[in-house]
Amino acid sequence: MKWRSLDESTPEADPRPLCEILAERKDLIERYVPAETRAAYARVVAELRNRHLAENTLRVGQKVAAFELQDHNGKSVSSAELLEKGRLVLFFIRGRWCPFCVGQTEAMSLIARQITGAGASLVAISPQTVKQSFFMHDQHKLQFPLLSDPGNQVARQFGLVYRVPAYQQAIYRRVFVNLPLTNGDESWELPIPAAFVADRNGTVLYASANEDYTQRPEPAELLRAVL
Image (cartoon, rainbow, N blue to C red; front, top):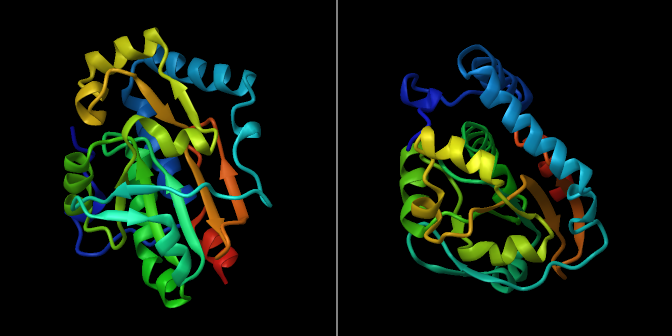
């Protein structure tokens, strides 16, 4: 399943603030997605907030555990090697089927050169398979690696993982969001959206996590944390 990007119909990527892009996509959902489906999505967010999931994720001052994952080309990427080069910007997305994840990755791609120009590395992490990450990277012409996190092992270290409830699984099946195929397992687990900036010693300098999948930090915030 693909989310068609604005970049596919216009020659330039969308330069607007990310909050405006996501608000526009949220408005489209309000207009075209049935009320009962939207209510179920809101219920999931409320339940995650009741569990205080975002409050228990990795915080500023804590250390990022070392990890090694495959990128969209199947190449092994080590956090230790990235941190040897400088600061590390990493953010967690749900997958290529999520319009808000697509909007965020495209917005981050616009500042990728500024991040690397500052001596830092930028990666995105999702539970989708390497094949799905390749499709996403190719379709949206992203300027940074997409790392595949099988079983959400790394996301779990950051405290981000939840299991999609049965009532939302039923909705996803109806709209052809096939997580077992996309993620390569039957866990029905996803990370809540989150972004982090780590110093060269792995210490978290910036942390943002939100149970609401429609809310993401502005790329400029992450760039400021790098600089």
